Length: 405
Image (cartoon, rainbow, N blue to C red):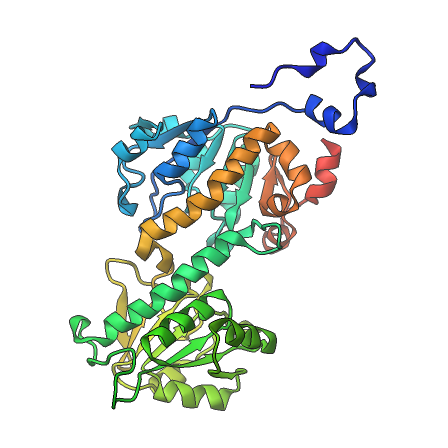
């Protein structure tokens, strides 16, 4: 811990310090306690910190409270965390007393009720499934909260969203390959090309990060890939990033319908919205697809992009409609939970280190625009304008709010 620098200066002379040293006078490095509760969501297999992430924090003087079994679904066990310095506790209530609560899925109502004012929550906001009541409870308890899907890096990118999208894009191609095989009662098609046999057709809806990594994985297997998106810029970027010419098209209804009719697998990774409609592919278009083909809807947590989609889970991931297999699990990254956990830990551990170095949240969000972008509650005040408008709740700009404190 840093000493109190103000004690070294006679009263009234601290103004003689350079600006950089004055900053240090106003803040001290802080030892933090970080609580990792066990995820209760049936869709969530990831853990927010790996043993390596815990070790990094502990070596820098922080205390990590880990609820027993929190890493089991990512194949990290209590002894792995204990060996790296975590304190393993049986009761969730003990974990929820930490300065920072770090978890993957959004807080449950029971968890919110156990929290105290000024605690910092870093978790998924999941706005599309968020309720006004849960937000109001957090406001009433005067909590600080950061939505990790809204965090930005120094390049203006969303590191958590990009990382999970990369994983989901690659994983979706593996899923398509599995369900086209006879091992899962598919029609026995290899998602890739071999000599003398036409490759399987894969249609990707969305030229974002998930679409790009799905295209790379499928092309690596030898599949024929077609990508649709309404952004010409995104289509050009995807084609450049995959390193070869592929079929790309804006979302012309006739061209899309024709592609769907010949597709063996379709990956949906964007959401189409306009008045009265929240999907991109109609049920009639799905009914015209080949029997035994598969749809993987990566947009289920945002409502889905196929009219025929309905939410499934890891126990029962697929259903068949119009002869087409539908895979509609809303959190595909959790299917490869260990890989996803490593990716999350690589993002969260450095953020917590910076919070400690800065002396807490207040100082860091003044300096880090990317971090402040993720803040949606500060001292029990709503600071996200989109949430405020969506739920008709009063909000304040985080920049103006920080100037007032």
